[in-house]
Length: 64
Length: 212
Image 1: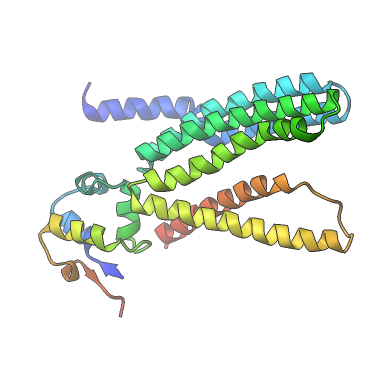
Image 2: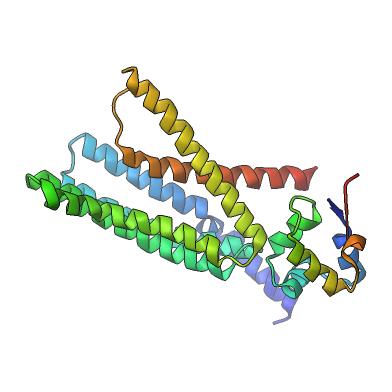
């Protein structure tokens, strides 16, 4: 799964720690999701979408 | 003091006392102490009670090891309240294990234990070991961060795989009388080593990806 988390974060001038704090997760988790090492669960994906006020499919897209 | 200068001061302090900030240093000191004490005991230079007291003292390396480990986890953005509780519980269980093992070995060497008494004495190191297992289970329940929980579960599965593989392989070697008998409690250290290897493998994978 690819995602636009890094771009969306940069647009808001947020650090990984800022985003982690807003999502109440660890910075390591943000890093793992951004680098595609870990795909978030559906509840976390919904929280991310709500934070950026965007539909999930505009943030996360399938590899193919 | 301005924020930037404060950060530079902290970095300067860290580099000045770099080795004291590294968990590896304390892990090395603890393992080195264990090795030296085991060597003294095997060579007959010290008796069993002295060896036990020295081993218990060497366990104190665990305090700075856990403290510096948590500092590092905090810097890496991996320290959660559940990890703090896990470290505290695991450290207490480790001290309990050392104490229980020492008392059990001491009693076994001095008295002809049998029946219910032997069973009760055998429980002395077992109860803290069960506390370690409970601590790991509680961590999985209490960890709110799903990625950290995922990492822990992968490490646990690698540990389980190590126990099953080593246990099965060694068991058959023993059946065919190729190796000496090994007590079943070795499953716990093998599991712990497997978990450590799992964590190390994930850290290496992360490094590869960061560099890639």
